[in-house]
Length: 196
Image 1 (tube, rainbow, N blue to C red):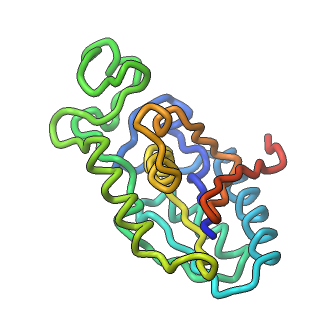
Image 2 (cartoon, rainbow, N blue to C red; image 1 turned 45 degrees about the vertical axis):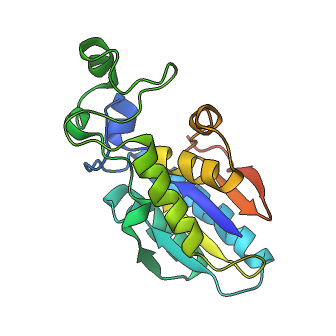
């Protein structure tokens, strides 16, 4: 079983700014989302016996969310670079609206921007990291992992887990107030209580 969480809302999420590998702190709402997701994860952990591990992307926003999970579950936080968000190259720090206006064709798959010029990663790069991480985990039924990561990475990890094609992978939701359980080939979404 894998419980997969995206970090809580950041100031750049709220501004609709490209984050990629750059840092942006959690907003007050993001802090509350992190606590709500942590409580939900702790409830699910209590229902499933086993040796749980908590693994996070090393970026600050993911680590802050993982720390809330650690406080709720009593688990220590490990980091793994393979859980880092897509690198968006020279787009990082820019507003999405400006990227769309200034570079309308590069990195766009017909529905969503993906990948970036100037050192950015591709779909295949991030899918490779996600698939490598999934392959490194213990097999079911003994797998007990909580993973805290990012929007694009979480989409691709779920896509790799379920064997989805590119379009289906990219069209998945990326909530900051829910978590996903990946177990026995199934993916189930659990929404948190609404936070204001």
